[in-house]
Length: 108
Image 1 (cartoon, rainbow, N blue to C red):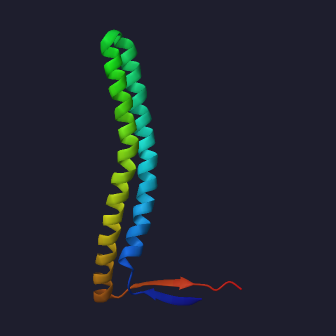
Image 2: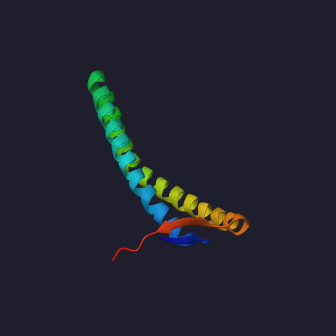
Image 3: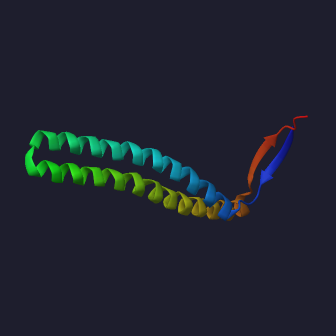
C-alpha cells in the first residue's frame, strides 16, 4: 500500500466537475418539477373549464418548460461557483494543516 497526500486541488478542474454534476442534478429536479407543474396546471384547468382554463393550462405548461430549463442552468452555475470556493478553501486549509492522506494500491 502506498500513501499519497493531496496538497493542492485545481480550482478550475474541481469547479468544472461540480458544475457538471450539479447540472445533471438540476436536470433531474427540473424535469420532475416541470412535469408536476404541467400536470397540476392542466388538472386545475380541467376543473375550472371555460376561457380561464386555457390561460391557466397554457401558463402552467410554459411554467413547467421554464422550470426544466432554469433548474439545470441554475444548479450548474451554483455547482461551479461552489466547487471553485471549495477548492480555494481546501487549498488554504491544506497549507495550514496539511493535505488529505489517501492510501492506494497498485493493481498489476
